[in-house]
Length: 220
Ligand SMILES: CC(C)(COP(=O)(O)OP(=O)(O)OC[C@H]1O[C@@H](n2cnc3c(N)ncnc32)[C@H](O)[C@@H]1OP(=O)(O)O)[C@@H](O)C(=O)NCCC(=O)NCCS
Image (cartoon, rainbow, N blue to C red; front, side, top):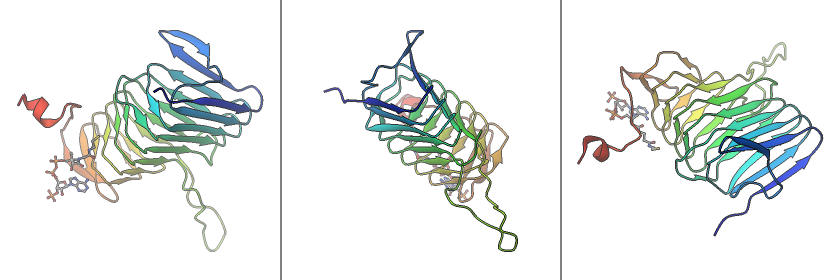
């Protein structure tokens, strides 16, 4: 049975387009199966390239000038993935990504900040990516905020293991791996590295990875 999706939009000058077989069209109110889209504000833009498969997923854009874009993927169905964008921020997911159960992407708090995932990336189950901390850390003496939101960028072909947390400033260069349960909160500019731990550090260099599992890879 095909799961219902929906599209609910409040506000002015919002656009939700679907690109299917190279043709771009406005999404109709039935939405996309398995994806609940709500937009509440003005000048928001959503761009979804099919094919993609969703189940119990949510996309919410709140406020003005937000942007969401996801490119096509034949990988497994996304289950309970949550995308939340507010305050003039953006989330952009590349082609052929593999996003697993219960991953959450939250881009808000500072206009212009974004979460960008390149092509051919894997985000495993229960990962959290957020550009802002949700509350403000303050200098005790002058009341100035200390934890300014910033971008999160994954270049092409990055594998993020299960239950990782990626915070503001996280940058992972191409062909790299983030070990399970790691906290990434700074830049890793060197490609082909394994980073892991809390906070993550480089554990191995000169690595690459393959989507196939071990037995398939070695031909057993
Ligand atoms: C990253 C990973 C692939 C590394 O595997 P590996 O190359 O066989 O690495 P090893 O087990 O030899 O570990 C190498 C070192 O890194 C450490 N390490 C590995 N993963 C780590 C992690 N997630 N956090 C902290 N340290 C880690 C090991 O303890 C070891 O340290 P040591 O040299 O001091 O003993 C594996 O640990 C991992 O995290 N897999 C992800 C599983 C997953 O989430 N799959 C989802 C499928 S979508």
